Amino acid sequence: MNLAIKTEFPLITEQDLRDNPLFFEFFENFNSEHTKRSYRTDINQFFDFLSSYMQGVRALKTLQRVHAVAFKKWLVDNEYAPKTTNRKMSAVSSFFDFLVEKNFVEYNIFHSIKRPRQEVQKPTNDLTDEQVQSLIEVLDNNESTSAPLHRAVVYTLFMTGIRKAELINLKRGDYYYENKIPMIKVKAKGGKQLTKVLPPDCVEAIEDYLSWMKAQNRDVEYEDWLFQPTRNPSESNLIKPLNPKSVNYIVKTTCKRAGVPQNVSSHSARASYIGSALENGADLYKVSRDVGHSSVKTTEEYDKRRKKFKDSPIHHLGYLKK
Image 1 (cartoon, helix red, strand yellow):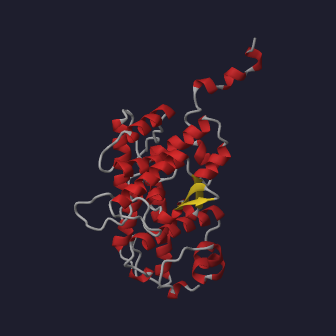
Image 2 (cartoon, helix red, strand yellow; image 1 turned 30 degrees about the horizontal axis):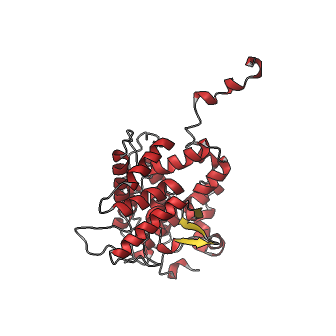
Image 3 (cartoon, one colour; image 1 turned 60 degrees about the vertical axis):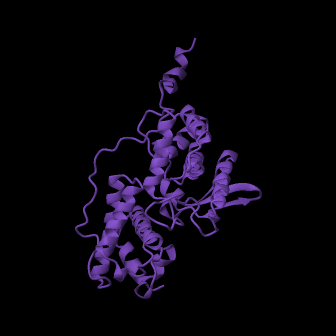
């Protein structure tokens, strides 16, 4: 593959790192294998963003600063921490500096783009099992116009642990059965492909939503986004993915109706999924793989529930036993 004549945004593969002189020179300039992997992940995410959301642009040479700003906004809307957002923008910016040096593009579109302030972030609030059960009860008794969508979105987030961006990017064809087992195929961070088994309650919520859409003469086809807006006063075309802010709104309003007091976000669903699984005996390594973490250490950061006084080693000291 020759990037100079490529008309689309390529996802950089291991083979590209060996065979494409442009990629080879850029990445081999780094000594750390970890840095190489991180930069490739971040650059691929930018390419994937362009392919998914900037469909009118098909070549790197045609990119402008507005595309860099749009990428930053997408990262912020999807609740990437400021530190992570800055790292991703810096990685892509380094690649554009290299492209400028090689006369492949005229200028670095990320230059002078303001980075988010790296303020100390509060840890994500996860919900107790009892609070999640309260959410489910509220959803099952919701009779509003958008109730089927809200129920399907919240069920899917809390019963799979997928990220908000992963939920938004699900297509109808990603929801399927294999050997009579309901599953979703998730395109996760870092180019990972995850397969998640769906519990019966989640399947019921999704099927009810799809049936409701069909009743509205809005059949969700194989290549369509699985979760679509139910209404939008400013636009007639509703065959598109949910807005990240809409997902936040759905989660927050449902929590408010259920009387959940703490400040929650859509990421609270992921934290609750991980925390509940670990608290109830799931293996840490298996949970880490299930949610697509690159390191078990990342999963451990969500394991706040087991950090209780009752888990203190003092309860296991042999010389204190009677």
